[in-house]
Image (tube, rainbow over all chains, first blue to last red; front, side, top):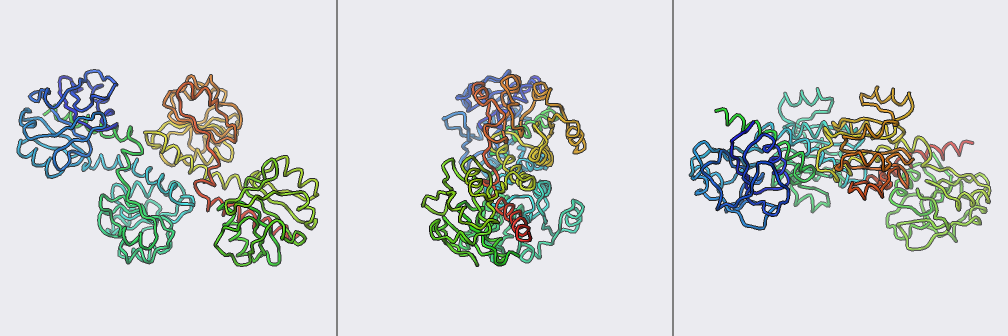
Length: 294
Length: 294
């Protein structure tokens, strides 16, 4: 339980509501900033502004998945008010207060550093990334069905990378009956791909291995689908790039050659906001409970 | 091979192109009617109109999946011309000429009967229905991802019916990690559901069994999801009805109660027209080859 713990939630989207719901169930005291247009009431949660909040009692501050913009703005879909996080806010919190955000940037890093507080970047955690790979894989399935004129069943699919996302994507497409090959460069990954009943290949042979595929899903955060590789792919191949911006595909060349290549945005928040919120809520609940124990 | 066989293809959509491609590979002589706006050329295929076609040499006539309208019109996406099939056309064909259509209606049945030709309804064939259940299941997955805010993974899914479509749908959702229960009323079906590792229930207990599910997929062509059943379902439950029109759901009541219930249209032609065309092409190739042998 999080009884007597004060969590300040600033901005966000539908995912924050799942988090608030969970923390409220755990009996935390929740202050919501940037939720003035929200009609739902939560037990133990009250609405505030950046000005009237009691920073001195905050045990934790929760920012949206996107953190802040480069000039400190915090996105919220539940208010038209502009929210800007300042060092000054954090300095008013007690020393043990922890800032939780999805990702960070220079602005947020500076704020946290200058106020001598600690920051947890939830999206960089392995557990969050693995749970999030489930809605990511489902979003990829949705895009593949929408953007091809063939079934996934019996399609020739190549997945690049066997990291946290690549493994889930490969397993999901295989479960739907696709012929899945997975490209990796470490021997233990090639072994795992084989164990999964899929066809492994070394990324050194990318060009040859992608010559006859219908769908190519990249999860490697490096320029791996080069013009050189694209030039030998069939023209009908759909490329879905799941690596963070700018992705691993030479999109300019793909377009020039008339190939469909899609840089997938943050799929969990789009295809399954409720589940994506629950994932963060569950991990946060554990983190806040452990924070309390210290 | 279908050398020297004359197939007249009248109207249709992208699926017809896959059929023409396949029959052309098998060396058939193909006459295309209602394709004047199509730029692709096919070896052995020539464009005609209903007037200039040589009916007397036709070994087979291929209509679109939809057959004809109730007044004989044949749909085509490749022409603005109006195409109307008449008894007179069929009477000019040789006696052994077979008419292939997806489905039929009174108009087409009468045409065929009055001209004493035979009709094959491709969509009623078991093999076609089973192959088509693959893109149907994938289209259902796409709809489920689009219309819910949770992942299919770990969602509580009920599939009603274990026929040709129900089995594929149940297997597919289970492969994606859903908790799948399947409703049926025959003991051998309940046995098969158990063998598949899914949870069986008798459709007599529909109301109780659907009380806590997130997604309900109906494949039974009868009014099974009644107001009585809907009244006890959670409000967030998404209903996808795959039974042919008018479906098995009391849509009026679902709407009144604020529940999302979708009658899915012919999914194979929408989500995977190329695969759907190949399915018909493969079955037709076998049928035409056997027709030739007689």
